[in-house]
Length: 236
Image 1: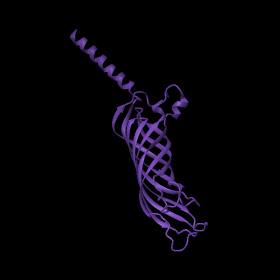
Image 2 (image 1 turned 180 degrees about the vertical axis):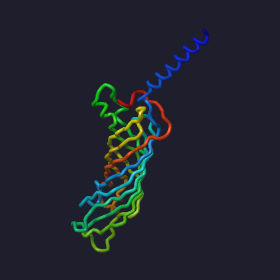
Image 3 (image 1 turned 60 degrees about the vertical axis):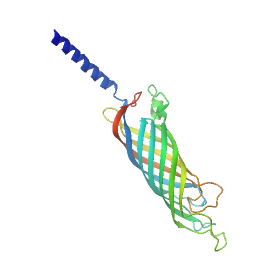
Image 4 (image 1 turned 45 degrees about the horizontal axis):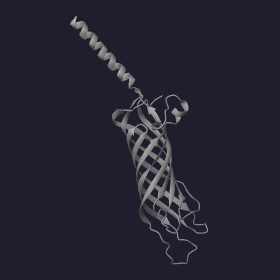
């Protein structure tokens, strides 16, 4: 009789455990992501308005996932910026090789909406906005003088500068799930404006406005580290 009772208890415990494990499928996610991206950069607002050019950048990032849809991202990047034309009226042209770092908070729609009963909401749950604070180190490798100023006049501006900036980004994160319906890696598409707090991105400091440049990036992030649970199912 005792053996029968113990066997029954064991079966109930194992069955309950199996149910709980199955019930959690789709709720778990990794705390951290590590990844990289490639970007296309373009000056938006500088003191060199002519013939804007696109240039490349390489990005590396580390993400702490507070939830699957609320993320803290540390990013480092290396790239080039270029604009201008020596044949234009001003003759201004610059090329900047830069290094930048940023810490951003990323909020995805899935944190705010109920996506369990609606296919459209489910598709939009990975849409995100992010912003934070960054720091860019500029090194102007090429710059031409302005044709319109008297010979010998030095145009204000620094060829080497370090400037804080504010990144503002919108993007979409395609989550790819493993057999347990946990996000195992993510493909990230984003468009970002970087608002500098100074006027030396291009080596000229003659404009009325601070400099701005934009970036379009495509990247991938891989889930690493411990797994924890979310309050609602992630995968539908």
